[in-house]
Amino acid sequence: MPSGGTDIPREAGMPRTLTASDMVTPGSLSPPPIDSTEGEQAGQPLLDGAPSSASLETLIQHLVPTADYYPEKAYIFTFLLSSRLFIEPRELLARVCHLCIEQQQLDKPVLDKARVRKFGAKLLQLLAEWTETFPRDFEEESTIGHLTDVVGRISPCDETYGNRMHQLLQTLHQKLASLGQGPEGLVGADKPISYRTKPPASIHRELLGVCSDPYTLAQQLTHVELERLRHIGPEEFVQAFVNKDPLAGTKPRFNDKTNNVEAYVKWFNRLCYLVATEICMPAKKKQRAQVIEFFIDVARECFNIGNFNSLMAIISGMNMSPVSRLKKTWAKVKTAKFFILEHQMDPTGNFCNYRTALRGAAHRSLTAHSSREKIVIPFFSLLIKDIYFLNEGCANRLPNGHVNFEKFLELAKQVGEFITWKQVECPFEQDPSITHYLYTAPIFSEDGLYLASYESESPENQTEKERWKSLRSSILGKT
Image 1 (tube, rainbow, N blue to C red):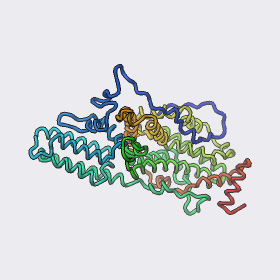
Image 2: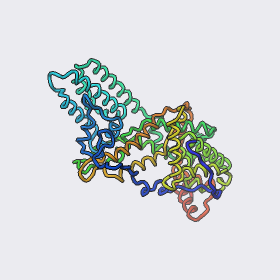
Image 3: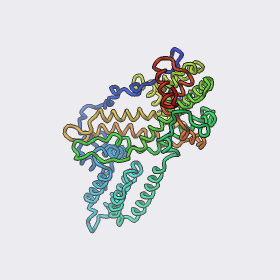
């Protein structure tokens, strides 16, 4: 298990329903303090040669290699990630290429071949890192033009540069093509068919009829999660929170740049509703109880694997009001294991139990001897909120107009860890019949869930009776 979990005394009974306010506590997500050493002041280096704050122009200059200088890998990732808050990637690339041409005098008819050879290798290394980590920065044809222009200027000094550039562009095009091919059901999962009444028997099958083994389903959920995560670029975390830069004339125009983040959140919501639908669908409470216990076992296996996103989706689905109100059904469920899992994902203390388990999974991943042990799939919505409040809690620029690079180092640390996790190869063989069901199985709308819940166990109070009457009238045409 990623982290040890112990049962806690709790009165047996109904699951606790999570509210929106439970999901995150903004006040407790203040930016983490940055330790300062004696004599360290703003403007002093945090990385070798990289200032804690500086003008945008200085930071761009620090990215540009020379014959005798190459920026640290951590600086490259941090700046390329955060710079899009101030300058569009295509403009940044144009300025980097212009600085290279100007500083190395690549526009002169006669070049210093020895110096250019030392510089050229470093330039190609920077472009390789940029295209590998942020391939979507090069989707526009103009960006490829900048690359071929600057490399074309140094190619006469070393015949290998042209071949290396060709390989770089070939790899880039393959990566962009791969990212453009979404996983099965990408559209279907984002816009699922949601029913207000039970779907026709001809198109509905129960999940237990497709997969009755909890461990197998947990593996297939992990397969889906990792496939979806693969399409999320690090830049999407920044572009999701792009605000107008006070020193810029207009807001950067980023369109359709966060589709994969949004699609992944929608996948989480779909899984919640799928769990609730599968529970509410059976007519007999014994069958409903069996489905609940099955999902409890699936959630436990997800926890053991390190798949916290599916785990939270399952718990959230079981905590939806149409499910949690089924008292007669829950009375037949052995809830001890469920309460342990709920405790692990309890939002109290800003999800402190979950964060402890996540750290355990992250440590296991670092010391892993197999790809199975490397899996860490964080609760994604909380990761997004952490990054959001880091962004909101610290200014992008200091009062003197300098870029607050110290803030972006912390941002890069959080995003960089996620990028490491999402690159893990899934060790489980895909079962297309199961993953297809997860993507395409019909799900109830919220009204449909309530109607199915009331039909399974009658309303108990006046509020429920009025809601049931309203649903029967609007959906079934009954009074």
